[in-house]
Length: 226
Image (cartoon, rainbow, N blue to C red; front, top):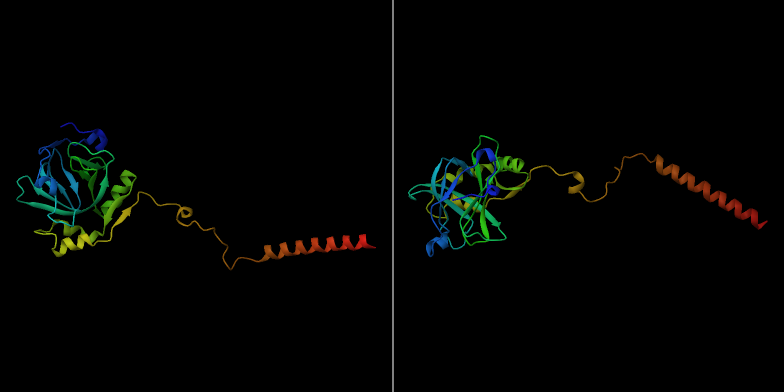
């Protein structure tokens, strides 16, 4: 399978991907089961997967369509249960797509989002805050994050989405880690006021000038009336 260079990050560390499973009807459309083979290590929230074949699919739930599970090729081992937010593509692809975040040279590629064939909406992976900050700075764009302490929840054994560690993921307060700090003027639009302790000398001088001007005008007016 030929991979678009636009979805890869570092030209020097291009990661070859092979889509093993084509789009299928029935159950695969429900859980969006997709098989990816990675020729090098890749990072997912909370861990790094070695090169190999993996199965990505949505958790079996009618309501929670934002929980992604990653299994071994034969689906006998669950590597992790991950929180995702919707990601949008203007034009759906006719094949599965996985995109990556840019990383420093020598670091494993970090999975950003996964799209099922024919779908406009994909699944943008939520990373622990410390990793999200790193990715945001490297890519110069916001990265969704969750509290660092929930990273361990992603690797716990899971049989259903009602288990406490999965519920904690679903209820996590999500943030968007930005790549850089914003200027104070962008955060506070109101005009800046002088503090109350500022010196009143300028105001006193202005009042004095106005008084002199008013006195002069009155003197001129009285002279004309005589």
